[in-house]
Amino acid sequence: MEFISQPWPWYVAGPLISLTMFLMYYFGKRLGISSNLESTCAMLGAGKLVDYFKLDWKKSAWNLTFMIGLIIGGFIAMNYLTPDKTVAISAQTIADLNELGFQNAGKTYMPEELFNLNLISVKGISILLIAGLLVGFGARYAGGCTSGHAIVGLSMLELPSLIAVIGFFIGGLTMTWFIYPLIFS
Image (tube, rainbow, N blue to C red; front, top):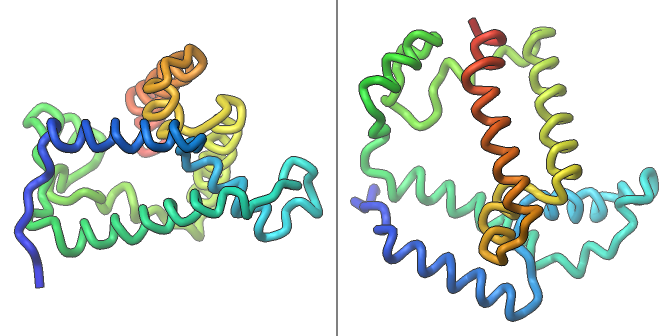
């Protein structure tokens, strides 16, 4: 059974995000996905190997619940609340993606050309390892992930978060326009 739904308008979703951030700030909590990785590693015993992970993961169990909610919410939204699987993107973006080898650009949220990477190949394993190391290093070096800095840090007017978000955008643009075409062309 599929429900027909429309995205919430910005004037509903924006204030709800603001209310959530205010409540988290009031209760002394910070939102971010990279902190979940730390908690998960600590929970699985990584503290026995690396001192960085010697922390009380039970203090951030609420954050792990949030992460599980994201996964379940994403599944529900994709399978039951998305009546149309096509993506509304401009004709120019479709043309640019076609030049990069995306034949069905805009037809689905997860293009096959991007997500059908042959993981058994040296190229596939190398891309995953390098990308994982860069994301992990970047999140650790920046003191948090994109969601933590962009949503929480900017809402708290933190200068380091502004600098991190600018860096994330520069990195994303560099990847999109220079590195990605070299890897997948």
